[in-house]
Amino acid sequence: MKARLMIAVALTLTAVAVAAAQSGTRWVDRTKADVRAGKASFHEVVDTVLKGEQVQILKSEERWLSVRTPRGKTGWLFEQALSATAVTPGRSDFLKMVPGGDASTSATAASTGAKGVYAEQYARDKGYDFDVVRWIESHQPTARDAETFAKSGAGR
Amino acid sequence: MSARALAALTLVVLLAAGCESTGQGASHVLGAIGAATGLPGFSSAATMAQTDVRGAFVDMDEPEEVELGRAIAAAVGARYPVLRDPALTRYVALVGNTVAAVSDRPDLRYYFAVLDSPDINALAAPGGFVFVTTGALAAMKDEAALAGVLGHEVGHIALRHHGETIKAQKRKTLFRAVGQEALSYAPGVGAFSGLIGLTADAIAEQVILKGHSRAEEMESDRVGFQYAARAGYDPAGLREFLATLASRDDTGARKFFSTHPGTDERLQEQAKLRKEWTGGGRREAARFIAAMGR
Image (cartoon, rainbow over all chains, first blue to last red; front, side, top):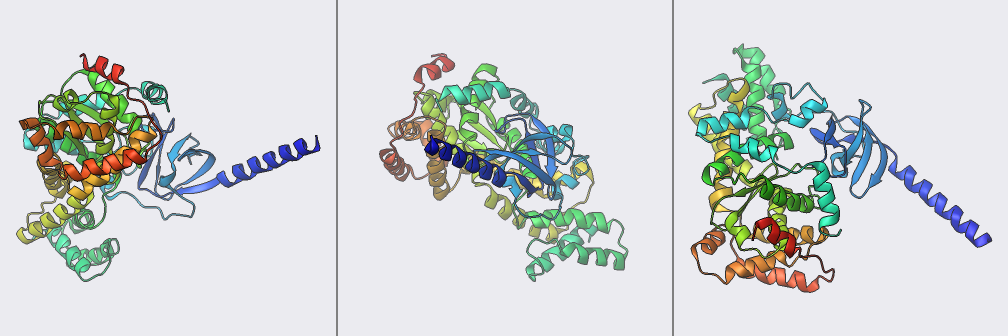
């Protein structure tokens, strides 16, 4: 009985220590990072964070961190997008040239990202049919389908 | 000399003199020059030029890479017709996303498409665009092979194998453009038709015609093997696909190997990895055959 109690206490302390190590804040170390609804890139973007912004860590699973953004949104970020030490804010040189790309941090902007008229203009200049790219982008599986397939399909 | 060309030339000189490797501090010098000379539009030209020059020396960030990838996807679509089969595209994308999710770059959004061509080929463009031809699908026996091939292509993207070509092309274009005063400053979409647009031409040529180096192919093979295994597939799929092609002597196989060098070495390496692998993995032959409509 005493041994069981000691094991339970040890497990509890370990869990608390792990939670403490995982919690806290980190800084965004990329010019732009999408915060997603799940732990894969096919999930919906719920917010976008910019270089130097601070996010609150809620939990960690595999290589992804559940975070709360400065705008109060919660979602998942890939661990490599974050730094444990403060990062100087900085904007993407490219996004400075994208209409709305520099100023906006909304989920709407995140879903389009830098996707603007640049590649389309290039295709037009070269005589390429850009509708092909739109077709590809609009015929990818839904997040639910992709997640179900990834979990059940190959037996992970 | 145009304001943008002057700004670009100034940055190149500063970088060549070792002023700052990234060119960030050089913007202060440019600002001072703009104020001193009173050249109209110099500040905005300097911003544009700084973007061009920095891109010739450092990795591009993800938003720019994605937009470059979209341009290259349009170029691929012009070379090969994209098969507008929603069910087959969805299936390939499901397998591709399963593999990409366990890659070294799982946070990049990936897009998968099927090219309607008897050529046996698979292509990866920067920014997450992956293509596989109907000819390549016809040479596969099961989903494990598809996972291996897509894992290899995801590897090129995850390992940023296009990065050095992008930087080299930007440097080449930049120096030529400065010499010819060809850097025309135009706000908005004009920016993309400058260095990035010219870079897109070079990367499209690499993706479609030239392929990657032998070392990059080997590296993508190794991570492709790992990604397929992590996703739960039998990682022998890629080796079997390559072996099938190696046993053939037709136009399709020859075209594939013209852009994917070092077959014998690659097969040996894959055989070695498979021998060391004890994890097993699924083949999903029935599901693959059903998806292919065979």
